[in-house]
Image (cartoon, helix red, strand yellow):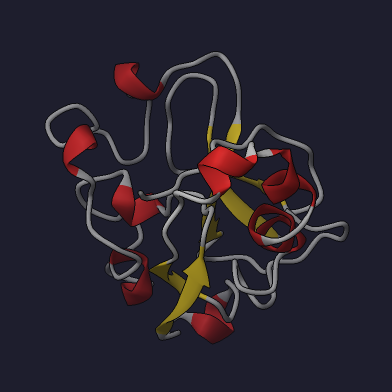
Length: 156
């Protein structure tokens, strides 16, 4: 996500977002696919995590490629009562409804054997982002500077 161990600035200021939308990762996509990708607005906590940001507002970023947020994957946020913004980064995609039922443990449909990033910051820490672990837990977390897989998402 970032070269250093921080989530300050959230998805909006992350190095990975820059690479996905106009940098190294975007440039790996075939031009035929690039020309079909639509720009979308994605809601995210773009402040950062930690107790000082418990009531952070979500703001929109304009993205061609993006990562899923935790609330786009799970039915309800594990942290909603303490960090209200965690339920405001989009709603659960239809593809996950009825399949992702555990918001803080393994889900068979998310199990891939690899760890991949989400765009959501760790709610109670300023050090990293959420990720889906290899067993399908969409509420796992890691330091921002760790290298994990990404699953770029886009709209036509």
